[in-house]
Each structure stands twice: as structure tokens, then as C-alpha cells.
Image (cartoon, rainbow, N blue to C red; front, side, top):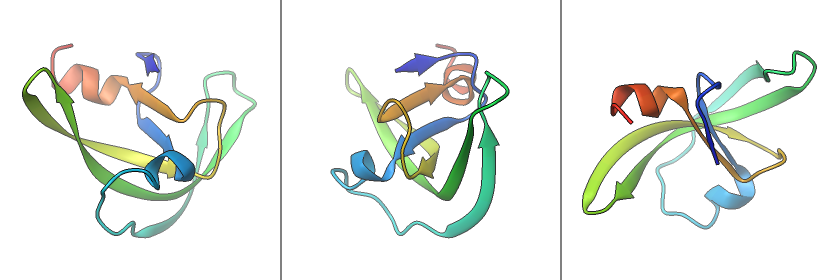
Length: 83
């Protein structure tokens, strides 16, 4: 899902388990969603490579245990890549 209202990109642990990725350094942070009520516990951060057409771009993604969707592409990537 693309959400230009989010400042970061997120992926669930379940979705991440299906991808090749580097070791996730643990962290102890909380992210507050745009509704002002929902809090997500961040379990780590990982860099992934996204491929659109034949172009690869890096993306730092915050890893969460669960959320309503497996992946959110936030404005961090959209801004950096003029999308």
C-alpha cells in the first residue's frame, strides 16, 4: 500500500520473513499512526531494495509485529525518488 501521509515505510515481520534481507538490529521505539490513537511497536529497521521496472532503489523500512496491511510505502521513499 502507498500512503503519502506517513513519514516512514513499514513492513510486518510476517511479510519480511518471505524476503531476503540483512540482520535486523533490534530497537525499542513506538510509532503513532495518523489517527492519533494507534501505536505500533517497532521491533527493528532494515534496508530493502525495491524494483520498479528495471530500476532498484534502497528503502529503509521499520519492522513491526503486525498491522492491518503487510507493507506501507511512505512519503520517505516517494520524496527521495520524486514519485
